[in-house]
Length: 137
Image 1: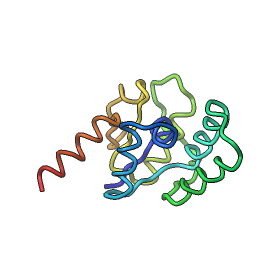
Image 2 (image 1 turned 120 degrees about the vertical axis):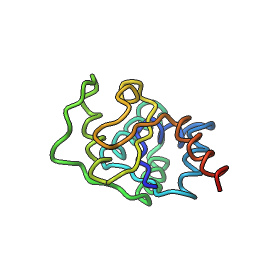
Image 3 (image 1 turned 30 degrees about the horizontal axis):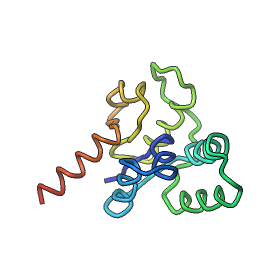
Image 4 (image 1 turned 90 degrees about the horizontal axis):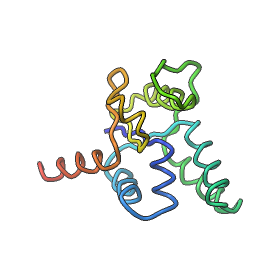
């Protein structure tokens, strides 16, 4: 399964302990994790501004992210009924990358349920889907 992670999930996974960190580790082991070039830029910006990450830490974070499949920024974005003007561009990357699902903590995106054939899950819902698959084996 190709799982596209939104910026907020990655920041939580890389900067804190908890569900997002565990989900990220498990996805890396069991699934294909896909992100977009705009996500890389946002993660680094947030880590710099909100967590005051040093240049050396930012370089390590970027190096880790670049080990993932990164979808380039797209020339067009879907029209979505949301406030954040950056999110459609991230969704465009997920669609272009043929992701099977999009994982985010963003309430507006979660409220959409899906965009085209791309289901949108919270980290908890994604975790539960992974757990259910494990139990089904």
